[in-house]
Length: 221
Ligand SMILES: Cc1cc2nc3c(=O)[nH]c(=O)nc-3n(C[C@H](O)[C@H](O)[C@H](O)COP(=O)(O)OP(=O)(O)OC[C@H]3O[C@@H](n4cnc5c(N)ncnc54)[C@H](O)[C@@H]3O)c2cc1C
Image 1 (cartoon, rainbow, N blue to C red):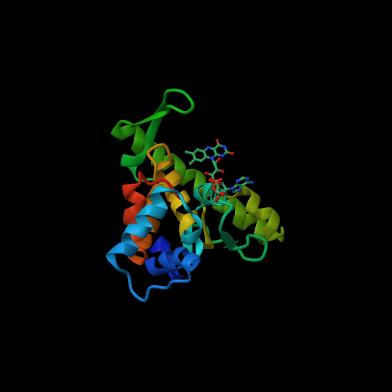
Image 2: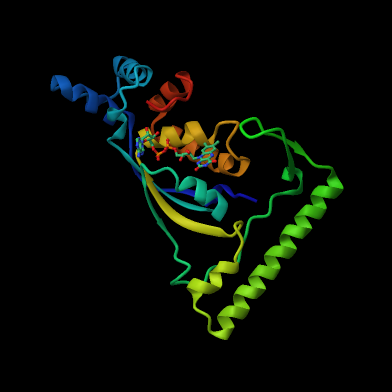
């Protein structure tokens, strides 16, 4: 299962006032606390896609996710990443197994794929096969390490479902772009679960910006 604790907001320098003041500096003005006209300004900036005032903040997340999710996450170039190294540490042999109800069948064509749940027996059987395969990979990994093979080579046999860990530091503008793409219905379900957890933490820190983004069709400015 993907646990809520797999997305931790370790630190943030982020509030709605930073958006307002970054915009108002054009007129050499500064607000001390958020007023209703400031809220309207945030909505205006979002609607008109004046994006840079949304960049003067930072969120530092610590993420634990399967490698196949991290691989999609790392495509988001506007942000900083540092990940646990499989060259320097023996990797924890822990991997993601979807719950049986989430084992799905893929139909349709590229760009209009549909996903349907599989029958109970087939999905339970798939879960068993996934776990068996993980177990074989982990045994092989440990055998190679015991033989003295370097960690950087032994890791080659590990599965895409293996959990990895990384820091992700990102500003609100790029975060909204990530959420637009990764919580959309066409994003893979597993990264959507993570995007939803990130979204809750973003909404808590910058509630007015968050509402403006939602009210403007979840399009990043
Ligand atoms: C549903 C889905 C399916 C996908 N399928 C595939 C796939 O099959 N194959 C694949 O390779 N990728 C795929 N991707 C990844 C996708 O192409 C992007 O790499 C990823 O979503 C990151 O988006 P981004 O470039 O907007 O984000 P970031 O890299 O964080 O960039 C943020 C924004 O900065 C600007 N920017 C960043 N770099 C540049 C640049 N070099 N030039 C100009 N502007 C820049 C752009 O405005 C960009 O939107 C998929 C993504 C999704 C959501």
